[in-house]
Amino acid sequence: MTSFPAYLATKTDKGQSIEKTELTEDELMDGDVTVKIEYSALNYKDGLAMTNSAPIIRHYPLVPGIDFAGTVVESSNDRFSPGDRVVLNGFGVGESHSGGFAGLARVNSDWLVPLPDTISTRQAMAIGTAGYTAMLCILALEQHGITPADGHILVTGAAGGVGSVAVSILSKLGYPVTATTGRMQESDFLKSLGASEVIDRKSYAEKAKPLAKELWAGAVDVAGGNTLANVLSQIKRGGAVAACGLAESMDLPTSVAPFILRGVTLYGIDSVMCPMQKRLTAWQRLDTDLDKDLLESLSTEIGFDDLPQASSDILKGRIRGRTIVKIEQ
Ligand code: NDP
Image 1: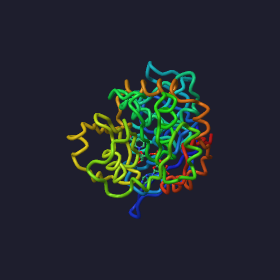
Image 2: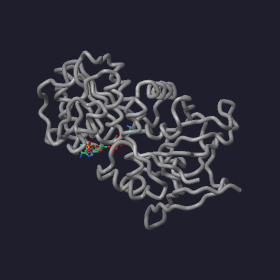
Image 3: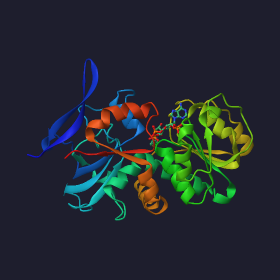
Image 4: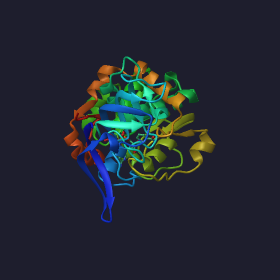
């Protein structure tokens, strides 16, 4: 029987622990497609799960890792055949169903997205859940009707995963982009991705006024908290914010003023249970609207054994851009 390396989360009376181990095929969870995982990625949520900083894992024993890309090795579903290259984001993978930090996964075929021919499995995980979520945020702003002529788009947490991919795509689409970051030393990096201006995130950290000077046609926010409240107060009349994260806080200490006095719209972005049609659109758009050289420049590849340290680093805001995890075979 095939065995493969994996991180496995278990729970005892003393709490959750995660160890690197070897699993065998008979330990895979139920599903109609088995995938040989080539790459996974490190997302903020993976950092929370791997360090037990938030109750992300809801079933034990479980392989963490909320996304992966690889090749189908077995399928009892007509839509997938051995050799197909696939990507999976969310649907509870790495939370309630075993995920990407393993050599093999067995999953429900309804969760799998066929990878476009022009995206490699490595590039798919350079994008990962963070990059796909950045695309969902941009689709929301586009559907709102915001065009490059409307003015600057603000991207918060720009040196992180969602932020760096959002900056790259928006600038390729012709939007003028302003980036906020707590790491001003990354200004040149952010400008290389296409940001025309970089602002210290400190100016978004204090309690927000109900309304402030109108500066942005739209925004992508990964932070929540005072940051999102300040961003909302600065959105131009009729503009919109796509909010996907809580890197600062789960709270939103704002007022109704931006909504009722400026007609601002706040879109909530949930990548986990996003319907399949929108996922397919997002992955097609990532193929055409994300510069693959820029993607490489914002990505770092780590080995399987580097995961525990990198998981702790991402929560401390020490990871730049995206982290690809090469799966040990
Ligand atoms: P990263 O850790 O890669 O990036 C987060 C960035 O947020 C950091 O790099 C930092 O950027 C910024 N940040 C950190 N702390 C603060 C703070 N106190 N105030 C303001 N900004 C801060 O994470 P990801 O990009 O992968 O994810 C970002 C957020 O989006 C997370 O909260 C994650 O859980 C969420 N998310 C949600 C999804 C959904 O489906 N809704 C899907 C994917 C992610 P800088 O150093 O530039 O300031």
